[in-house]
Image (cartoon, rainbow, N blue to C red; front, side):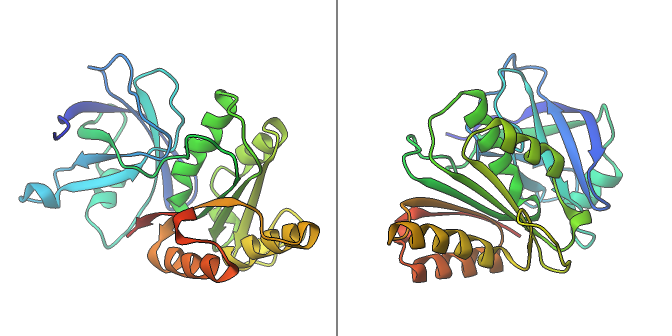
Length: 248
């Protein structure tokens, strides 16, 4: 059964990088917007005559909090139709049509294995929702590794917030990876996300003699997701341990 389209309103925006913006969306006709961390919403934007060519989907970046407000983090794609409309035409107070929540890119019911959350760019959105939900609900968990890839430090998303979360959520580790910037320090990587998770897994293997039991969640551009899936299986994990969400 198709979900109904609901009227929503943009109540706040904030530029987080030169090309990435946070949007806070409220659905006034609902007292509470319920969703599972990892799910997404779909907008019907006035950008095309054909209805299905107006639909654009974005992962929810906030954790469920019992209100009718949720957050999105969206990167501007200059050659597209959807994000230029959101960046150039949508202001505080703008009304939109939204449908959701949708999607099955959600956490395992029991976090009895290490959790590797591997993403690039705004693919961080569902993982931010997940880790805050784990903290808010005090969900029992093993190690959680959030591995975030972008080009340069100036492209980082939620960096300060996630560093603070490392202090507040036991077993949570934030690993930013910068492909075009040389970083100094144990908490940051120069290069792509693949070297990071491989290093973490190898370190565990050296200590225990075997690869750690783990779930892998991949979200971002297709090339990264495809490469990560292949490399993780080459390490020795079954494809059933790998969950995907593609952008673009």
